[in-house]
Image (cartoon, rainbow over all chains, first blue to last red; front, side):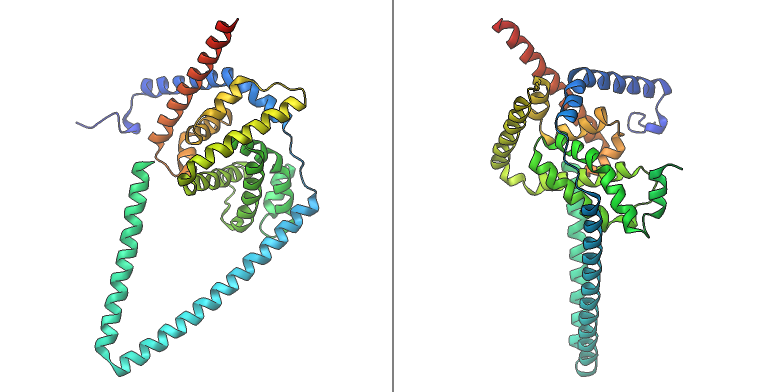
Length: 128
Length: 183
C-alpha cells in the first residue's frame, strides 16, 4: 500500500545500488569532460594569499564589531522594553479598554507576521 | 593530533587560531569561488564576505564537519543569496558574467595557457545548475548537503544535476561537431 518510490528507507537494496552506480557514472563523465580543465584552472589562477597579520587584524576588527553590535542591540532592547513597560503601566492604570485593545492588536500583528513568514518559507521550498 | 586539529581545539578562545585557520583555507576557498562564479572580482569579494561571516558565526561551528566544508557551506549560501537578490538584474548580470569570462580567458592567454572549451561550456551553465554540479562531482559533497546549503529540496538538486550534466554534454558535443566540420 505504501509508495515505495517516495520513501528511501523502503527502497530495495538493488535500487539504491543502481542509483549509486548512476552517480558514479555521472561523476566519471563529469571528470572526463571538465576534470582536467578545472585542475588546470586551479593551477593557473593562484590567488595571492594575504599575510598572517591581515587575518589576525580581520579577526580582531570583526570581533570588536560583533561586540559593538551586541551592546547596541542590548541597549536598544532595554530602551524599548522600558518604554513598552512604562506605556503599559500607564494604560492599565488610566484606561483598561485601550490596554486590552492594544494587547489584541499586538497579538494579531504577531500572528500575521508568523503566518506571512511561514507562507514565504513554504513557497520558497516549492518553487526552487 | 595534526596542526589543524590543534587549531580547532583553540578556536573559540584564541583569535590567532581562527586567523590561522582562515589563512590556511583562503586558497581552497578562493579556488572554489572562482570555479563557481567564473569571475575573479566576485570570487574575491565572496571569499572576504565568507571570512567575515565565519568570524561572526564561529560559536555555531560544532566541529562535526571539516572546517573547509563549513566555509564552503557559508560561501555557497552567500552566493545563492546574492543570486536571489540580483534576480531582477538578470540582463546586467549576464553582461557582467560575459565580461568576467572574457577577462579570465584573456589572463589565461597572456600566460600562454590554454582556455579549454570545457570551461566555456561550464561557465555557460546557469549558476543554479553549475553550483550543484561542481559541489557534487568535483568536490564530492552529498545531495543533502548541497540542498541544505542552497536552501532547496534534495529532489531539486537531483534534477539540477541531471539538467546541468545534460547541457554540458550537449554543449561539448556541439563544439566537437563544429570543430570537426570546420576541418
